Amino acid sequence: MIVWISFLTAVLIFLALDLGVFNKTPHIISTKEAGKWTAIWVALSFLFSFVIHWLYSTNYIANPDGLKPTTASIKFITGYLIELSLSVDNIFVIAIIFSAFRIPQKYQHRVLFWGILGAIVFRGLMIFFGVMLIHKFTWTTYLFGAFLIYTAIKMLMNGEDEKFEPKKSFVYKSLKKIMPISNHMDKEHFFVKRRHIRAATPLFVALVVIEVMDVIFAIDSVPAILAITSDPFLVFSSNIFAILGLRSMYFFLANMLAKFSYLEYSLIAILSFVGLKMLLHDFIEIPEWGSLAFIAVSLLAGIIVSLKINKDEVPE
Image 1 (cartoon, rainbow, N blue to C red):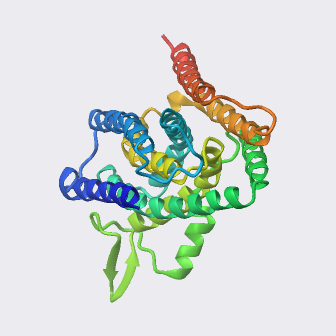
Image 2 (cartoon, rainbow, N blue to C red):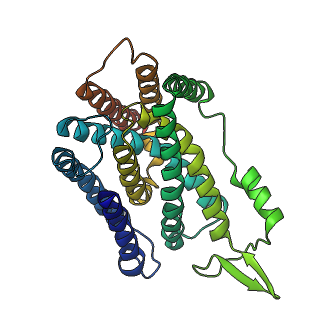
């Protein structure tokens, strides 16, 4: 319990510093600044694997699966890479949402900041129930595995045909029925008072849509990491590190999303792999380093192919 409280406290302290110190004044986050923070979060995530090793070697945390310290560290890194790779799709959707509601760049960070708080709560609940189901009903492992393969096939078949339109979504239409929505911005405020009526600004609408979309994406990502481990702390901490790094990664990649068009196939490969791993876990045992290597190679291949093909397509 002390470890859990300490981890959550550290996350909340950073978030407070982030909004109250580092980004106290709304500003446009440059690619250089975003790149710096992306590198910091990736470095912190890999350094945290050493903390994981220490925690599991000193028995400071519950270890229901009896994991060895090195195994726990590898599972954390593998889970983190899965969550980070699946976040790429989330970045595409966030860009579409900001564009649809015409959110100025200097206010986008504020929306993503508050979105993280909601994501931590919802991801925590989904992880809790997911781990509980796997521990109590072992057959749910096959259910999650089949769902991941179905998702991979759906991604492969749909391609780019399925376009998300925020203003035509169920979330936006439902929100309009619940509260008044203003089309005008009021600096960084989520609500504005117009003629004695308190109306939501586009910032709040974008926040709600992003929050709901994150829950939808978590339906894929949580089962994916449960294929690697059902240890609650490893699943939760890897999710949180990926979510915290998502904001800076969004601003870093926002202007380069088109260059990584072939990364979608890496995500399909990863989802298929973890789905098969869940379905065949009683017959085939894949070592932890094997899972980590496959996911890392898939991501690297997607990035290299995307950059190479896009470079070849640029007219001279």
